[in-house]
Length: 406
Ligand code: NDP
Ligand code: GDR
Image (cartoon, rainbow, N blue to C red; front, top):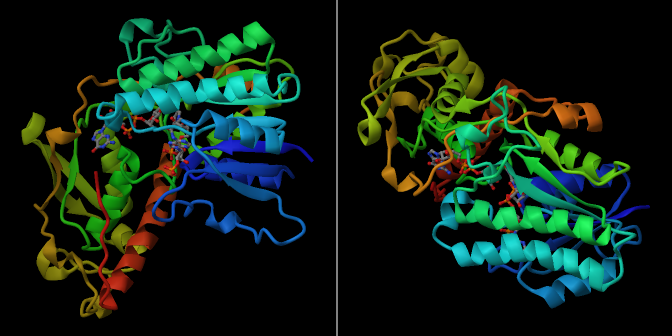
């Protein structure tokens, strides 16, 4: 039985990776941070009673800023593979806490690598470092001849997060070359899922589309709608992480879909899932997204509710449902403003376009994503509609529901 240690196990990727490794028969250890409230929602379904005999998933309290803690955990666990996914991963927030980001995302990586060396585990332990497409910074001149970023494209980070991660990238490569360690970078482009943090743009959009359609939210506030991202599904991307550590030689790999899409179009696709078509009007901070039309059939299929005839001035799909007390579209009319621009979400320096070339990972790792963008949006929307419906039941039962958007 192989033993793996995952930092950032409570995050989006950590939770999917833990599932994958458990399926593969690994003993999985994860590092979680002590917090004043529960932070293990994404992995609670993997929890095992630690008094049982055959425990194969174990959590350790720890923090990437604490060298002694990292050394002790690695010594105790003696891992065959370490996946260093722990990070302050929000690009916008990294402008607010740059020193902390450097400490966790840059120095944290060094602490892992050096701990393995101090403990003499260089030959036994393989290390995966969560590098990122943010390293490229979206500089147009650095794309390859076909217009993609690949393993040999130059880096130009555009945020404290990117600058910290570039140290993580190079120190991983340096330890590989200097000490012959099996240490690899996965340069992953954006990947999302129903477990994506609610303040990243895709999840913010799918949560809002579901909540607006079900009458639980009025408007979605966004920043730059023009940014282009190469979005994949986190489930596919954690498979690539594992494959990278199963190779004969340690190397760095780009993991991407090879398709790029505007934030604006992700909004359109998510709202289309509940039958809404958005029309864009205005420019810059004056821009708004207006409900232009609604496809009753799609709305009904997604939400199980009919459209309020008076409010929307369209025929309901099923006359018998018109008097349903739970009809919630009554606050919407066809010209409702559903999306507004809020400059709070603009970044001091933006990464305008990301588009990755997955050729090396496809040919060398045999990696193939199962989800395309439409499949990703559908997965996220289905999950968020269920979540909002749960909130609706709570509200109906007289409970307060508060979700903070950022
Ligand atoms: P998340 O933000 O969902 O998860 C980050 C994880 O790191 C959480 O478990 C978090 O713990 C933990 N963490 C934060 N600070 C510390 C710390 N000081 N010590 C120990 N653990 C800490 O990120 P993702 O799952 O989306 O991403 C995983 C990794 O991949 C990150 O390193 C990210 O930068 C990188 N990446 C992500 C991409 C993406 O599109 N998702 C693309 C490319 C790279 P807690 O739950 O307590 O906050
Ligand atoms: P990103 O992801 O910065 O690419 O980093 P995010 O979803 O935060 O932003 C993507 C793009 O959307 C624009 N945007 C907004 N972003 C947020 N969060 N909120 C908004 O309201 C909003 N409106 C527009 C942003 O300006 C940006 O252009 C993610 C993280 O997971 C990193 O850890 C990872 O390394 C990279 O992806 C690859």
